[in-house]
Image 1 (tube, rainbow, N blue to C red):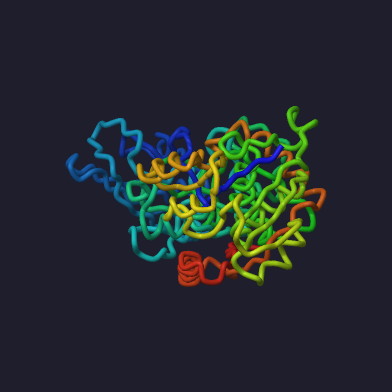
Image 2: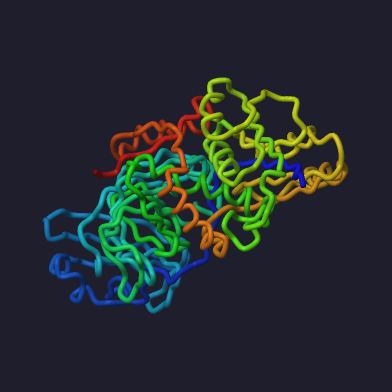
Length: 440
């Protein structure tokens, strides 16, 4: 059996189903989750001064707060909600966050205005919600969607400002929500996906010191991986897995699954164009681990040696018919890959955070007899697949099967250096994988 497939990839994060909102109130006299400030965390309650101004509905709700934790540090957090609020309104999306249940403020890198650079700021430390853990962050990986959110306001992020970006993270479990159950003890170093909440404001990314995150998608970091290395092991490997093993991709059974036990992986001839990209490198690795026959097509000769070490059987430049396109900008030119199909019957799968296909793209693909798909790759979208993938990926990490591509470390939450790194990712000049060191 041979599968002739083109997959055009960009790093992405899709919107997650909305959990119970945090920091939502219906009475300005109350704090987080409606609890009076006087009953807040003992370390901060004595110095917590909740305040809100219920403006006319046309202006929405302006909220500000100042908390002083046990260490004496002061935090000021201000923003304007997108949802109008009245004096007695029960608002589910009002961005009115108060001091109750908040401890000391934490450093963050924040997006306050679309098209403007990220800026340093401080946020209160939110308590974990149902089935969540509070993670003290050590490092955060940067991916293309971070600059797309910053510069273009995709996925409606402009209605959820201020925002903390960063969708790849590594940190230590600091605490669990009440009643939460997990096999990972407090103190475990874990890989997690930032931005898992769909709440407003969007302050759940990894470019900050602490963040609540769902327990379901935590992966323990095995010995032998630094926190900076592990921060590159969230979005890109999962995107590669969806390409290869999910029904929305080429739908090869996940290794170790009931369908995968007797599957002839070696019968698959897979060609990868743009295999030297951050996602492409993981496609090569996962396909090799599964036992595919791989031919990797890359644009840069500098990537040849690494790709062969990951498991590519051949490295070629161009002229191939069946290709996985992991090169930058593929989603911006959805028609460009159709030219490699010399006969009907192939599949073109694109992963993107953008809108649906242009009609011209669909028509062009249909005219060539090519099956054209566009999918989102995200834990919260492919939940059942993620539940199978995470333990398998955990096992491959422990067995040392996963190689971490080279990374460039930004040594602190430095807004200037982070913005420069996002600019470099946007330009696709260096192809570097950037990781921000948040704490030790």
